[in-house]
Length: 395
Image (cartoon, rainbow, N blue to C red; front, side):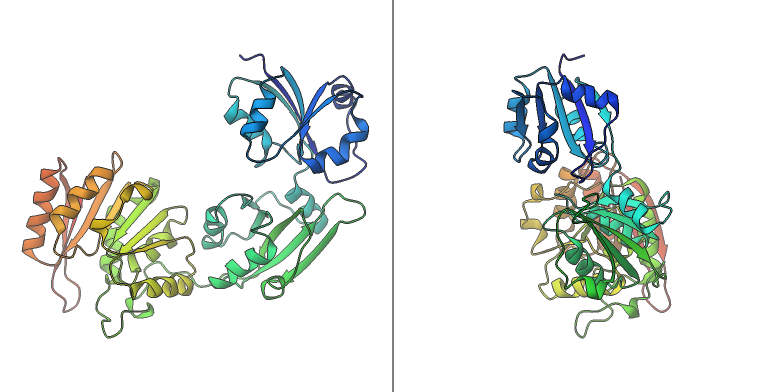
């Protein structure tokens, strides 16, 4: 165990903080203190004379250098420091440190209290310095109550705009501004259409309350998708799509690559059923770019990354390595494509390929064998008056 010791004290935004006798003693007997500039403004009159204060500012590398100079540091953080907070960051940076945390209510708890709503089942996400993924997952699942920690770039108006872009106008938004600040606290409820044009003060947080459920598919009819102009048959048909997705075994996967996405039907269906899955969709046709965007908006599926160009020329190191790959198009370079995929496929990953010819079946099997893989499953489906399709799974 390291000699490094952190005492992490949670604060509200109140200018008249209440602390237990134990915490007051830790403050009065402390020498080195740290926190954000707003925290310093709140507690500066409580600190002992001659103490050291270390501002927490990004990038944090300089903060860690300052921390390394001292054995014991009292740190002030917002709300509950272990709720998307600074204590978790400290644990990652100083895994062997000794730490004690004295939490306050986090801002989402405070907002739920102001709204007088039970929040035990609320799904909490953060977009504070983070991508949209957590919020995207919650709205695709249509969670009844979603608490969102915000920042200056992803605030209430931006959150409202994202939900509206993907058709989730079935939520109301309550915004808490300056919670705990006796003079400036404000709690207001809006429709998303109203919230998107408002300006909010910081800090703030948001609770989204679902009014009703929007339609959600398990198996989207191919007639519902936007298509390539004049090529309505260039889409993976719904029964084949669902079967292929089942063979991808996505339940415990992290990243799916959909190669040759065309309309994006496999990507959209997979993301709807597995909202936390990262989906990266590749397609060489430029006109498919807007089609994917429109289909994602229509079916309420934010978070799919569309990549346009020749897959064989991409620097694949720029993208999260896949543990599941669906090949919907190969441009006549199937063997070369499979070998390229195997170089980046995570251990235990799978490739699923829909073949419409005996020749492509043979080429896929040969490529998998060349790369040291094996065909794990193979099924033939015939749908209506279409030609049989062979679905192969390699591991």
